[in-house]
Length: 414
Ligand code: CAO
Image 1: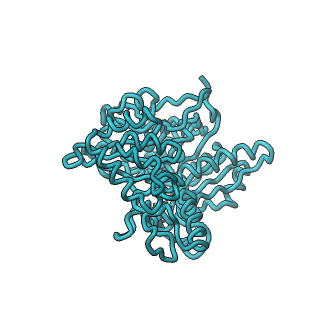
Image 2: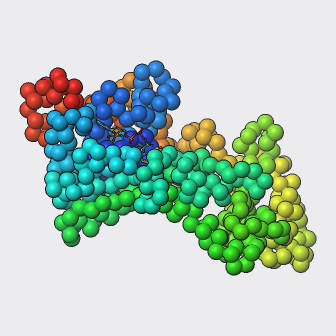
Image 3: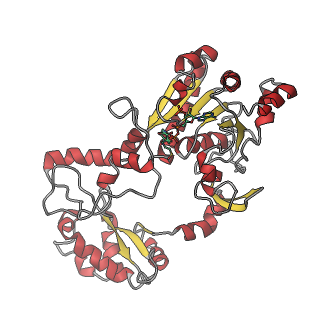
């Protein structure tokens, strides 16, 4: 079956996590992704957090599926000539170097346009134009600079970063959307364009509701669904712990076995339309008509009491038993699933969200497949390339003969 991005060629100059997330998605949608790496070490993540000596790490293999790998010294004169051919050959160049690295290599936007006016140049940077534009940025820096850390954690503790890689993988997702939109626009303009996804911007976009709350707070000085209520608020959006960010109050409650299992917890939402069912399930039938509890507004200052009663009930059930019983009454809730549980979850295997991949030097390993499912463009997850595995193949496609390729190898350009 065909794929959505069949025929699109990507010059993949990405490394670490943010850029590779983007190009992996494009590869899953059918683009031919040619990853250009330094010979010798390649993408630094090949060797980071290794679990098997001398074998590409899971960090690398899980972010570089379905790509081809070419090694090329793009700072040497001959390497630059090969890179020029690649620029002419491809539709999109994706990079996430430190600011200015591509220019220092001699591949400015103007030079790329000269070589290929249809080329889309897509970049992840830490910050957009402004005081920090020259800074190098990693995941947690972006989470801190984009508003996530200041709004995550508990009121009486320090700012917290989250395990979800919203700065890296989140920005890679944003960039992928920009690239497909630019490819679509090119159909009418015939021109390429620059696409920039800054990590600070990507994180702030994902923290949109917190900027909403900042403005609510400035106007009303309290936010009734926050755990600080009815106490005092400061001038900036506070950390809300595990309280629900939406209009329906929610919290994490303990379940049977929490003393020994760190993930024996359930997220529980006291959704207003099912309040009667909640009261019946947790044995608080009197709260259905009690004016102190009967309406959402009346409950807001008493949420601690409400959730304590819920927890009193969940402590008698495992998280899965609680989930099943509550769902019988359409009460929204969710078990806290560990990575161990997710890795073994049959439904995620069945949909291809968790896949087993075979690798020539590592053997079988688990990966997260394409989370976006398309009915006419199914994803087949193929293993990541070995370093330089496709150098000869790609250079031949660029029109280089065997003797030229041998000479480049002898001079360590490839
Ligand atoms: N041949 C020759 N040189 C190459 C090359 C190749 N094939 N590929 C890369 N290089 C060179 C670059 O040109 C650059 O050289 P200069 O510094 O002399 O210009 C050099 O390798 C290092 O690139 P870098 O500065 O991007 O790498 P770093 O390890 O110092 O920084 C990072 C890494 C991630 C902090 C930085 O790239 C960055 O800020 N990127 C943008 C934001 C981003 O994506 N961050 C998230 C990363 S995922 O956690």
